[in-house]
Length: 79
Image 1 (cartoon, rainbow, N blue to C red):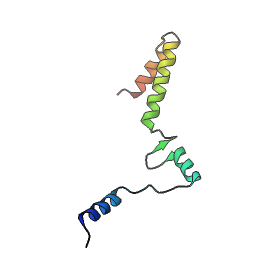
Image 2: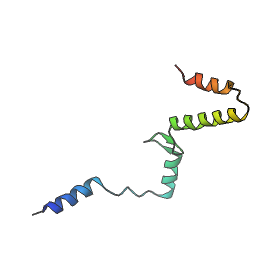
Image 3: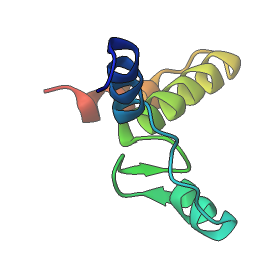
Image 4: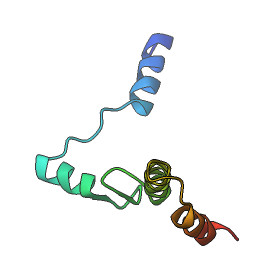
């Protein structure tokens, strides 16, 4: 007959399992493209847009503040 302590251990093991071990090759290919998360190199599409948007903004500020590239970038995403 299981005790309350045994029941709690079973519940813990049911929800907190170790992740499946993958080979190095499989892990590498999941890093390149992960279909479950729909990410490339560990980043989703929106995070890539954010990274490149910040890069364009910083480059424009360093080049003297010409905002033509920034205006084009913002206009492509505005509705």
